[in-house]
Image (cartoon, rainbow, N blue to C red; front, side, top):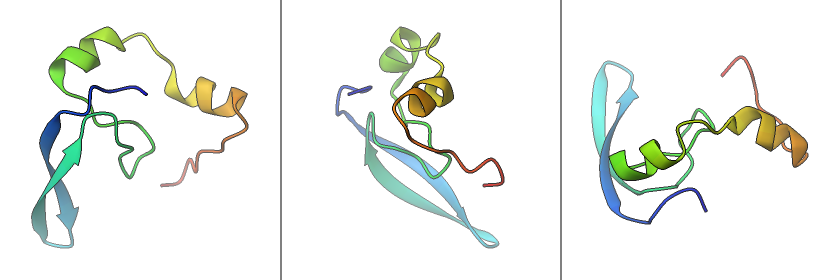
Length: 64
């Protein structure tokens, strides 16, 4: 797991509006990267998420 599970407030674009959502630290964002709190982001700042995903057989859509 790449996060501590702390509840975060994130903002997601929905057309011309922005929606506020609650997510757990470590949950996957729509871009494929995890949402992280400041503490976990500092701990994982040097991780290459795309390389790790490819090594595990996962695939990213580059046109997202």
